[in-house]
Image (tube, rainbow, N blue to C red; front, side, top):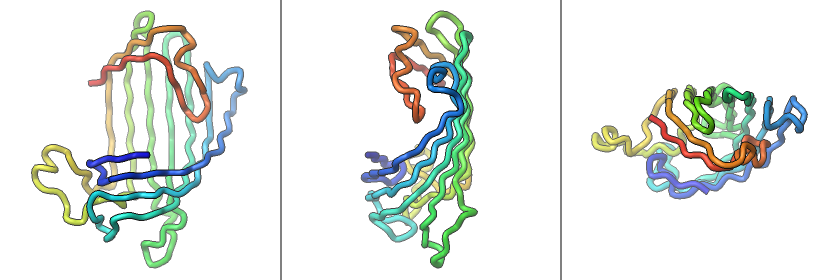
Amino acid sequence: MQASAYNNLKSQFTLAPAIEYDLFPYAEATRQQLRFTYRLGPSFVNYLEETILDKISETYVSQSLSIALELKQPWGTISTTVQGTHYPWDFRNEGKSLWRQITWNIYGAISWRILEGLSLNLAGSCSTIHDQFGLVKGGASRDDILLARRRLSTNYSYFVSFGFSYTFGSIYSNVVNPRFGSEGGGTITITM
């Protein structure tokens, strides 16, 4: 379940079962993973305001394929993910599914262990965007733009971040379930 005034979402519920295959054996999952994950399922969306497609609510189906590499070493961690998302039954454009309109995301991160528990984190991401279904019909006011309160139409996005994190507890506490990229444990992160 998701809600976001920035993305014009009153509520969004996605039911997307997934299949995952890891190239490395499960016994090595705490040290290295090369995961291929495929998801397919519907999203049920209610918008706060009418969208550029004249919708206040809608249901659509999406599928995504991601490839994620995670390597954990005594000095730190490297991770990268490439993901493509597509809407195979998107009939908004004269009844044709638009295979060329795939939203791509490339993400990379390095966490370098400075001291026991203290790490320097560097991360970056870039995306092509073709799934802006929730854009508000009337556009954004000058205040919304200056204060970044509303998502604007764009074909791409990117970010770069750096920061520090401190992990405490058992050395195995942050690996609860290595599948589907989920982690738990005690971590405090400061990002700038």
